[in-house]
Image (cartoon, rainbow, N blue to C red; front, side, top):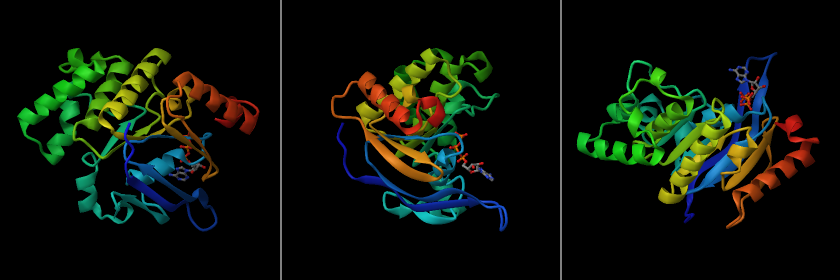
Length: 259
Ligand SMILES: Nc1ncnc2c1ncn2[C@@H]1O[C@H](COP(=O)(O)OP(=O)(O)OP(=O)(O)O)[C@@H](O)[C@H]1O
């Protein structure tokens, strides 16, 4: 994996929900960079601010203060016209509950970002075939979501997140609705995409198994990043997984208490 320059810069991000007497400080000044080609994980207990952080980066919500720079551009200050250009094009999204449209086939779902941003049909066709082959979804391209397994739906959603060659894919608990086998399969595919094409991925997960596929993990609690684990060069995933579990045990007397 060739790691190059800073792709995403998160600078002193704060997010408050609510009003005057009833404010929840979900993010209390979060800062970190993601280098081009990284597969970064964010782990933390329920309510720690993971989704809020991802949604601020995804431009789905506006931070109370602080900035998110993508390729040096302050996307948190973009207006709706700029955002429309970025969403689904420069930023790919992968959600826990797939968010496929029920009345569209797999292929039509995958092509949705292209319908919005435009791409020649021939080019799109070649790209779909390539992604479908890699993600093993060729046989469900003409099926509707209700005819697919959970794992197939999530791999179709992964293809949709990648179809427009985004700078970064943001994944929120992508294995959350999958059984163990499908979850491992999906993570293997995401790791393969990260390694083979250098695609940058930012994934929020509370699952140590899923997180062990990342090259680096940031730990968040009470809206603050408090620890970082980096997968060593050539470290086997199983060894990284053991280190994650050890850290969680140190932090909270057992992973169940922490996450
Ligand atoms: N729309 C909202 N309005 C008010 N408070 C919110 C809102 N969304 C989140 N919060 C609060 O902000 C804090 C962080 O929530 P967030 O969803 O980011 O945590 P999380 O780590 O993703 O949790 P989980 O793992 O349970 O999804 C929590 O205290 C939550 O109750």
